[in-house]
Length: 178
Length: 106
Image (cartoon, rainbow over all chains, first blue to last red):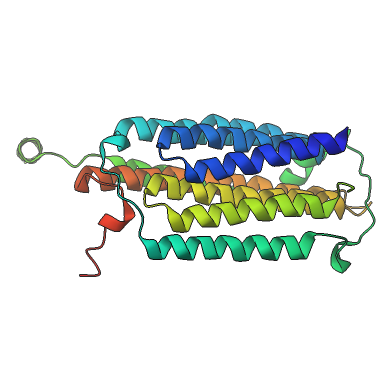
């Protein structure tokens, strides 16, 4: 049963990711990305990382995809001309895909030597508690740094997306200040 | 076949390969950003599965999971900044196709 669920979610995740890349409409890509992220969250649940699964759905499927959809609607991307990608980049990307997939399959198929380790059962009951405890003791400095990173990103986004003052308005502002 | 660490790593590697493929193939910079997110997601999956299967009894399985927490934070910040750059670009150039933005080359 567990094996069946794993294969279901794995196929769902990979196929949805492939459709993100291949679908020509940007809105469809965003929708398939939700499916892919929910599939990953289910894999996290199967790995007993419950908090991260919830975080994945909240942050990725909740916030980031909404941001993507908002920008897609705002920019009206479909109006922009559809140009085919060049033959060189098509050949190179297929080559890169084949190399990566071949490497992954040869590394991880069968029982590789460096992966043959005993599986340790960890108690999942105190998972969230452990998570919070570790975050606020051993990883306190990284938490602060991440907070500053978010602050800096917010300031940068506000600065980037602020429309520059139009010339007559700028003139009036300068006149008022003098 | 029994589901173990190698199965999860295979899924993670396939996701990474798909993200790489999309990054090289697509000209739309929004889709490029989505491919980046897929690659980050693949690395998250690998981290979680390693920390699940390599847990030592003393330190439980927290290190990998907490690293994933920070990766998600950085990914959110990266998407916000990237989308703001795309909006600014569209405002100035009326296009977001990456092959139309080659002024520096000429």
